[in-house]
Image (cartoon, rainbow, N blue to C red; front, side, top):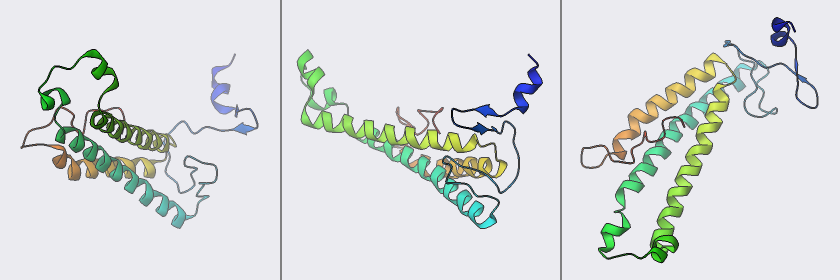
Length: 166
């Protein structure tokens, strides 16, 4: 099989042919996340897309800092109660513990969703989209990471605890 033909031919995605962009390019025609979100070369629509993705990356860092701040603001329950906890209480937990872990799981899940959507947007290989996402993440981390710190030192659950998830 000729290896060069694999990269030039369309991919059969179960309903039609589709060419996948596998190199970085600069242009205002891009499809982001959904087929309906196609800028089709419209500069205004492309600019709005860039602004939205910048704000999404910036907001993702804000969300991450809020999650880290929340996790660090609550004392571990075993230290807080100061009593011996049996295995049943460890498994089932109290109402306060379950609420705390539910909120932590909610913070984590939203952060994961935001990160993967931003990753998929970067995978369009559009230079403008990549630049605004990385810039939004940089400025968001620069702005909000200080709020995830407690008493001047970085907490155990810092804003960077999930480095692979934007």
